Length: 402
Image 1 (cartoon, rainbow, N blue to C red):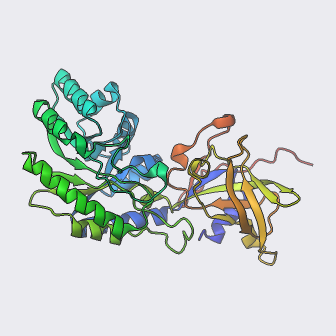
Image 2: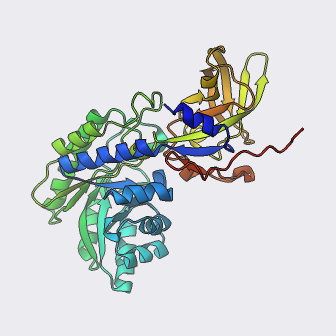
Image 3: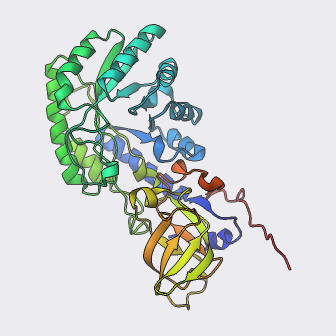
C-alpha cells in the first residue's frame, strides 16, 4: 500500500507520473538473487519490461544479466552497467546492423529464432571475422493458457523454431563455420500463474528436446527457459513479490542437468510490475443517465495494456484516504483523455466518491507501462518519480489564479 506521506507529497506533483517503490524493487531483486544462488540458476532481467536507467543500474549492480530484444536495448544495457558477457540478444527481427554491432560488443549469445536468422548471423560473423555464440529458440509446443497476444511457445508461432524444422536446423548448424552453438532457449508465454503445472510440462518437453540435440552431436551447454512468471494484478498489496520460490524450485527440480550445463531464467514483469504505479488526477466527473465517468489525465498513451490486451489494473482513489468518512461504494467507468474509445482504465469499478482533482493510482504498472509509452495525440511523456528521491518531481503549476 502506498504510504500516506507519499500521497500528501503527490498532491503537489504534476500528473500523470510514474512512481517507483525502490524498497519493493530491492526486496524483489534480493529474493531473486537469493533463490538463484540456492538453485544454481543464472538470471537475466528482460529489459523490455522496463528500461528506466535507474532501475537497470540497480539490477545490474546485483549481478543479474540482461535479456535484450533490440540493438538499442543491448547498447542501453551496456550503458547501465551490464557487462557484455552478461547480455543475451533475442528477438525475431534482428537487423544486419544490430547483429553486427552486437558481434562487435562481444555479447554472451544470440538467441536465434529462425533458420534464416542463423544463416545471416553466420554470414555477418564471417564478414567481420568474429565468432558468434548462438542459442536456438525452440517452440516446445506447450500452451501456457495466457492471453493469445502473450502466448509464444505453441507449435507454430512467429517466435522460435518448431520440431518439423529440427533436421534442417542441425544440417545448417553443421555448415555454419562461424557459429558456436551454445544451447537452447524456450519461452512459452507471459503472466503465467499456474506456475507448477505449466513449467512442469515445459520441463518435461525441454528434457526430451535437449536429449535429441545431444544425440545429434550438439552438446547443450545452456538451457534457457525464458520468463513468464505472473504477478497478482488484483491484490498487489497482498502479494507484492511474485512466487519466485515455486518457479525456481519447479524448474530446478524438473530439468535434468548433466555436469557443466547451466540453467537460465529471464524474469521481467515479475521483477518490476508491482513496484510501479501510474499516478493520475481526475480532470472531470461526468454524470450520465446510467453511468458515471471519471476522466483522468493519464491515458492509453501512458499505459497501453488495458487497451491492447484488455488487461486489468487495480485502480485506487488516493485522495479519499484523506477523507475517510465519504461514501465508499460509487460505481464509475474510469477512462482516459485520448481520442480512442478503447482508452478505458476500467468499467464498472467500485470506488469511493470521487471529485475533480482527486489523485488516482493505477497499480502494478511497473512492467510494460513506461517502456510502452507513446506520444499519441502529441501528449507529453509522463516522468518517473522514485520513492527514495522525490525531490526532482515536477510540482504542480496553477495556471489560473484569482
